[in-house]
Length: 351
Ligand code: NAD
Ligand code: ZN
Ligand code: ZN
Image 1: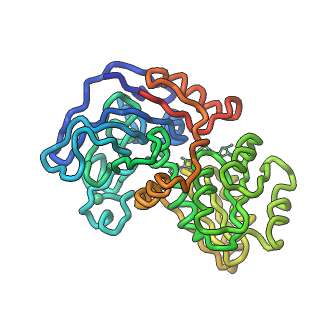
Image 2: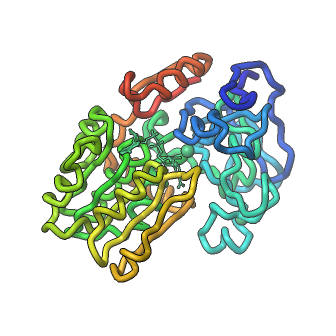
């Protein structure tokens, strides 16, 4: 088969590789129909994720048809159309039993690491992929869900929902700010509407992303390049600051922005993947009664999000800005990595 293989920082190739086969009785093999590229794949290509070794097939999002299942797989059958979760879940370890799938203790990849596709084992940017723990890591695609849109369930919708909105404990009437209106920030914006905030403010340095966010549930947009961006945000509150600040970039500057706009007693939810330490001004903030949460997506709300998608209650079709044939994946990477110029949000590859 053909696959997108990481060859070290800055290098990737669409090349012929051996077809994946069942290795354990709990595995399935899935023929990929739709996959996509994540901001995290760009981090890998920059060399920010050294655990990814040359030769690894990238990608942790996908929808496809099951072509083989191991003897111990009970609930997934050959021919099922499935959504592949970006986090693999053994279902039996202490963390999985507590719903904290992101820290699954199985020895697929490494114990304690639930995100293994395109990281510690071969991923989904390929014609076929081996899926460990098929019963607990695949979701059958229900009627009513557009297969291409279902790739948004693999990672970004549960990430924005669980690590942004749920960790931020958004509640009716809240003013919510989402810093970073990339696909993950947009997912936080869209899913926050499930909890009845009075305002959702999208903050980004890219005017296109701020404008797009208003199509997906943001009531207001603020350009972080404006010198008075903070005053603009405070003016959208009662003057005291936002109830919930969601950081969806992963940079020291945007972490600082979240701390600058949250009100006393408010919540900060960090979603961004950080490559360097940040400053935490505890001397200023010790008395502020803040709640600060971090997290790696568990995907434990994916079944709920799939139901909402099937009922047309999550309007996310517009997240997909570009479509490419799977064998044009190098062009798709080029488009996605120049989002400010190409206005790319999610680029979907179709087999
Ligand atoms: P992205 O790169 O597409 O989007 C980031 C957005 O932040 C862009 O729109 C960019 O213009 C904006 N931005 C950058 N610097 C800014 C600044 N100084 N002020 C305001 N906006 C700024 O990435 P994405 O795919 O949306 O992912 C967002 C983050 O979430 C990444 O760090 C990604 O690695 C992370 N992530 C975390 C998890 C998790 O489980 N915690 C899961 C998936 C992705
Ligand atoms: Zn991702
Ligand atoms: Zn587990």
